[in-house]
Length: 335
Ligand code: ATP
Ligand code: MG
Image (cartoon, rainbow, N blue to C red; front, top):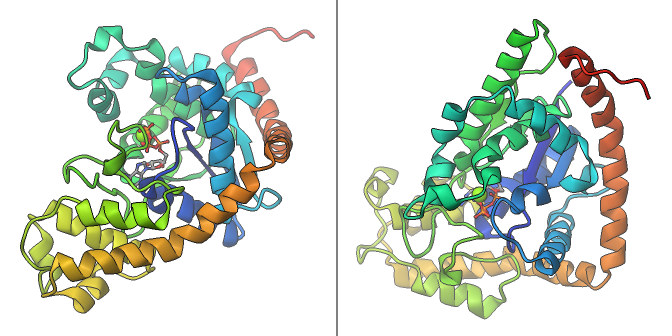
């Protein structure tokens, strides 16, 4: 039976990229009746410095974002990673299974250290994919919905599962399937069509935040970098126009349409027409979520209660799998 696991880092506010590439699809999977486990990966967030009070606030805000977007904490398991100790415990075992060379080849590591002294980054940032493999395999999850940027980490998760099974001569960890679907699996920065939209980008103008108000959303789309040409009449015409393509994909994903349908409607029209239409659509889709988030965040104790309840249910699945892992590896457990 399929079991879905996925997570988002509370490393900042949720973006339109997180929403279209991940959260919106988490809700769809839940509503298909599949078992769904969703995690606010706070242990991942501290791979780069997070102010403790901000981290707590960001975690609650992300939880509110999940619920506002349609995650029902009764039907899905929703919790923060650090409340289930098995994530860190299994990650250590995987640190001893995975190879340094595998980590060094990860494009996220390369992107996040680009132009910096990698030697001065945290060891946790380097080992990030090992903890991510633990997140998924701790639940024997079969399917992991993510954005395109996480594809390589999921391949590594498969490599770790296979190497563990091979080294210990067991058939224990499943080989998980990435689920990368929809029109916006890689939403790009509004300032740079070659960079993905990220909540940790220093430029707030590069992204739409789920909590942005209508004016801010309209202004960010108006100022989004584009070329001067009108939209092409066919999808093919978007090939070498990354910024235009990005906006078309966002429009498609927000309206649950295909990029073809968007081009059929807006082909030949200029950005002076398309950008305001896109802003209106984004506001119509995001404003109700932002409103509901605000309402939920007014009661942080209730959010903490929901996360605690989710963590207890997650731990009930994780604990037996962790115990079996320790048995396989040869750890004595006599208490
Ligand atoms: P950070 O900059 O801190 O890494 P992030 O915006 O990349 O933040 P993550 O928490 O790393 O967000 O990723 C959460 C989920 O959102 C993952 O499934 C990831 O693939 C997806 N995602 C992140 N950015 C985008 C994007 N620009 N387009 C589509 N999906 C995205
Ligand atoms: Mg990221």
